[in-house]
Image (tube, rainbow, N blue to C red):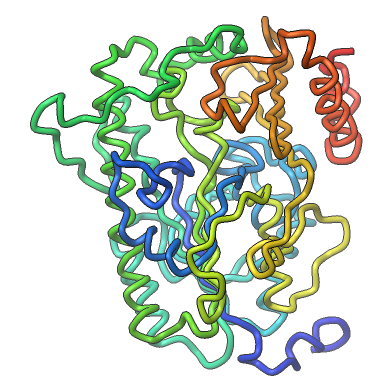
Length: 441
């Protein structure tokens, strides 16, 4: 091994922390009891939060599994890499420059268990820097990770445990069998959670979302749901979260048994959330808070800053690669996006002034949209429809019920966020000439 790769490998092996990356699929940031949710009980996610730093303002790069995961492992936004759909393979220039290959080249043993979904549902063994120790599927995934932790080679390691649930809420909504967990039926409707405070579709919400909802019954079978149906949906969603929490607990138990807390960075997150009845939305893709705000817990070596909560803005997808490179000493390739969230967790530093999330309804009619999140506000823009421009005060209206963009007194704030988006499109979108046409003047 020569050149730039030699330096990280020559570093004292265990002076660099191990990395354990635990990921769920389709879990909202608020779907944890440690986030104050009384309708779900997640003792193992809570254990991670008690031993780490919980970020309340972490967001996906794009609320769809394939694009979000591609952003995590390549460091590029979906509109840069072209990874805008689930069934798109990585281009050849990125296949050998994933976070897995970078960390492997830095001297780590890299193992992957569970859902990959950067085109193929399971990761091909030996590709993208990882050994495949368990194909997609939640049954047996935790056990495979425990076995790896007990029999891992000497030296630092990077283990990914990628669970599928609570994604099975998609099958539940369609009346299908849930393949990765069973859902115990509620004794009565009264045992189901109530409707969320933002259950209603808000006045001045983007009209294009209702249009999209009627384009694909398979994605949105909830179009004819009654309030009681939505309560049963929410009950099922939280039971699926609890099912995956129990599996995560098996890995956390092994971390306890080996006291891996001492020299391991443990990151827990999800690729995106689910509407879960907010604004009567299920599934993802829309730019609602429940869909885009995802859990992020970072447990530092020695449990430093255990139990703290950070409001730093994080794009957990494109910020993942620079963060892992920061901890492992892997060389970060030029031209990638994002910023390491390590200083936010270790030193309590503030995050960036703005982050951007993008979306694309290619599974239906191709609606395009963006979200600009600042410390106080969230600006949302879609490319078509009535009320396609929205502004919400996240301090007083996290449920996104009052669109301030329709009021002239917020015109300057709207313009400020619009200009941030304009600059972001110029810097990051490969479709910039087309996307800029959607920006209001």
